[in-house]
Amino acid sequence: MSKMKCLGKRIIPAVLIVLLTAASSVCAFGASGRVAVAIPSFPVTLNELKFDDSDFAQYPLLSYRDITYFPMTYYQSGLLNLHTSWTAEGGLVITKGNPATPKEFFYETPAAGRNGKTQTATILNSKVTVNGKLIDNGAEPYPLLLFRNITYFPLTWRFAVEEFAWDYAFDNEAGLRIRADNFFYTRNSNYYPNDPWHNIDNETYYVKGDLCIYINTEFVRLLGPVGQNLHIIKNGVETRPDGFFAYDYEPQPDGSAAYSKKNAPLFTVDGNFIRTTRYTDPDAKNPRPCRVNIETGGVLAE
Image 1 (cartoon, rainbow, N blue to C red):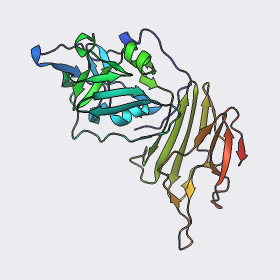
Image 2 (image 1 turned 90 degrees about the vertical axis):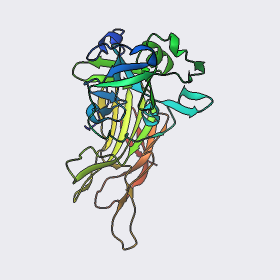
Image 3 (image 1 turned 60 degrees about the horizontal axis):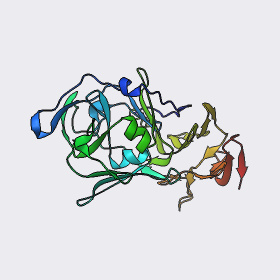
Image 4 (image 1 turned 90 degrees about the horizontal axis):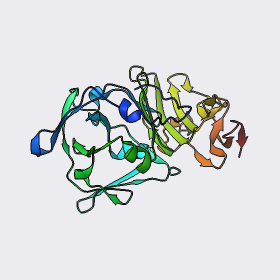
């Protein structure tokens, strides 16, 4: 898993449906509803989080009839500002979420073994409702699929853009990138699995149009927290104010220093400002509430 970076612009070329092809077209196996699907090899970025290990993904993207399919898992759909629920009577219900409401994100557990490039899925025959509209899967030109008990949606313009309000782009180098206005946070992440001395415990993201704000609580053992950890990217220009932002410092009963993991969003958004905590001296470890101007990156004490 690689370090995240925010995209500067949103790109929605009309030819994406042609570009999102994988290895080959496949066809259905008779009346059973079973179909052969492929696992694409290109990298995937969902709201600036990179998913580039499809070989071991429990719920990888799929390709069917030259269209890329997206897995509607609870966390991955929430990452892209969708709310999902399921009941035996109502089936799967998908609605657009509130992009200003923070959502918790976890990475899915990897698959038990390496994925083969060709897999078998089935044509979904259960009830699905999207934004209040019942899907007639038998009439869909690219039907919804079921793979490992997860519903997969085709990344057609109708679903991705009109129903889900996603922006998406594809090129041979960066692969598939999907972006949606959203506010979400991760926790207990680690982007340096081969470096036990260096880790990131939490990241919080706010994505809106050409604006992306994120804070990462990053640590290097023996050196402590990493500063300038607030990133404001607006129209492709990044600002990183001085200081140590959103670290939770808690003195221990014996008087020793300790940083606790914060299992919650690291900031809130208030109009043109974000509100969080900041300290400037890594030895003092005395965080104070602050406001940060989204336009300028300037920091104001509360």
